[in-house]
Length: 232
Image 1: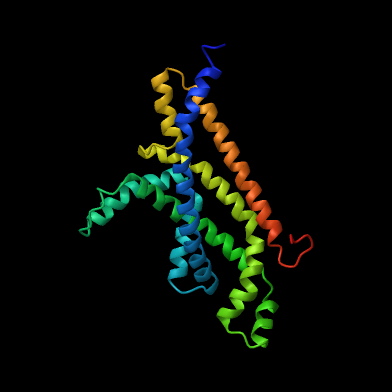
Image 2: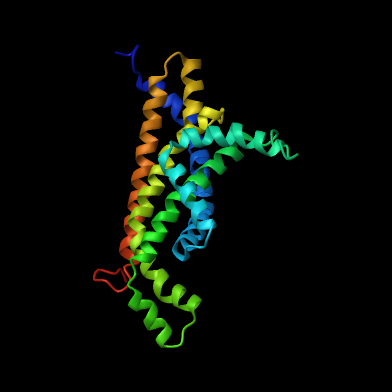
């Protein structure tokens, strides 16, 4: 059995692999923060149905939701430099991680845009009318009345999306970025045994996914906005 799997080899790979979880978390943070900002812009434009831009965003969302993230990353990595070079802009020297960030941000912008749009539109129109009736401006009504309720609706789906994004960070290895998967591959090759490294990578993915799930469950209960069971 030891020639297939060894706990001794497993203990050796743990300190070599653990630091690389930070790369995956960093990708998630970029996608989460900038993707959320892009998603909110997309949601507002889609709700207001701004001519031309609305149609362009419809194509963008359909493409992002209809293709795999791996395909999107390859198109961005190989296609964007060629496209910009045609207009005199050379980005071929950019770090590969930059293209990974761009892929996750654009992908999240599309998925979160639809999530935010659905959450905002789920708030009854009477709530907006009530804000206007007490003298609030459109922006004040949105920020004080509509947005808090929309956030509550969006939290469960947002959490699922973040967990999926973390699991998708493994595609960064395709561009040669040394993340968890890349490091596991090199360690396994050097040791002549890859199973232990991949077992530990699977363990890390499971643990972090569970922690994200617990975090968003807590957020969902904490910010219940007046429903029963609000913490504190």
